[in-house]
Amino acid sequence: MTSPPQVPLRRVLPNIPFVARNPIKYFSRYVKDYGADFLLAIGGSRLTHFTVNADVIQHVLQRNHKNYHKSVIQTRDLARYLGHGLLTNNGEPWLTQRRLIQPGFHRKRLASLVTEMQAVINRCCTGLDQVATSGEATSLHGLTTDLVFRVIARAIFTDGFNDEETKELNEAIDAVQGYVIYPVRMPFLRGPLRWIGQERKHLQITTEVRARIQLRIEDRRAGEPKDDLLQMLLDSRYEDSGEPMEDQQLVDEIMILFAAGHETSANALAWTLWLLDQHPEVREKIRAEIAVVETEGPVGFKSARKLTYLTQVIEESMRMYPPAWITDRVALTDDQAGGYNISSGTSIAVFIHGLHHNPEYWDSPESFRPERMSAAAKKTRHPMCYLPFGAGPRLCIGNHFAMLEMQLILVRLLRDYDFVFPEDAGTVGKKALITLQMDREVKVNLRKR
Ligand code: HEM
Image 1 (cartoon, rainbow, N blue to C red):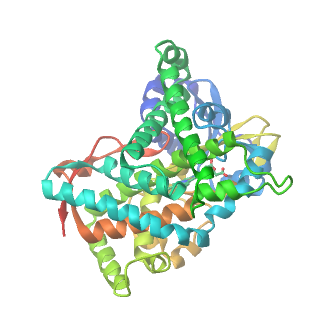
Image 2: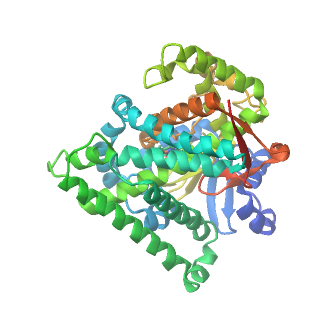
């Protein structure tokens, strides 16, 4: 057993400012030069084992997951703003919450949320009709974020927020998510950000969002039960004590569902629409598939499963542009994986983007080929070389929810609108914040079909 090769400091130090700006480019270069596993002193100091090796990842996330916890970046830095819930806890507190919340996200349970999802999408499309009529270009990211935020807000609170409140909530959560990356990626900014009042400002925003959520919870308790995620959280009881969740925990979990559940899907949708502009033949093939499925009625929970090609396209889009492009773990005790020693305390960076572009598993990884996501093709690959939703016990709890909402949204958008992208859209690049975004705002014109 050996240690992976280490990227020499003479190479790391001059790159520090550039890595912070474009981490994917630099991490990918290191993969090319040093292999699927390498050690990198992030920021010149935090030594981290980077991996795009499916065997190592399988060991860390699945086979020996008990030996690996999330790092303080998630459990302390993110938790300061989002609270202590599913995404940001470790060990026993995480497991207790996961057991409690999991049933609410069971695929079958989603069937009852579809009507609400459809209602939200219909309403948003009325707004998009106006955009199309006006002839004005609209922000692609704004469009997809607005849609999915409304979907998740409605799935949690069916009786919840009106349009204005939803917009304010979306802006508040986006502001916090946009901010937290700075102190995480550039720890030396922590002091200055505090001194200039940015930290206080963003903590204040989260306090206000929490207060709004708390009010909605109280309204619900005083009113009628509903068939939504809030009700599921309110009605669930801990196995051992038979008690419900404390309010503070409830608010934390709702904050986390909002945060984890909208930017990811919004980015996946934006990248997919963009890819379809670059590959019109794929777009037309999807439209033909939708037309066939719709001969049996509007696409719903059951018929969405028949949209196999659309599903492959979404999956291939998330291979090329994984919204959650990296995650981390820390080893609790000495361990070994894929022929490497991993000593206690080692940080592991699971570089999902790098894994999805690793030529060991993907032929021509930079080409967009939805066929590689067919059931037959999947069987020929390593089970852990494609992880848009993570893997093991901490697999994304919202994966079925996300796939369903993306299918329903794309069906409606592709059926009803042509998206006219600007001439230079082909040069859009990646911007890796907490999720993987486009490196500039793309404005599209909508034309009603
Ligand atoms: C395209 C959309 C999405 C992507 C790509 C995505 C990706 C991921 C990934 C990779 C993880 C695992 C992180 C890790 O192991 O460190 C995760 C966890 C999580 N996701 Fe998602 N997600 C998406 C949508 C959603 C939605 C819609 C929700 C909620 C409605 C959600 C809620 C969560 C939660 C609560 C966790 C933490 C689970 C746990 O640790 O037990 N996600 N997601």
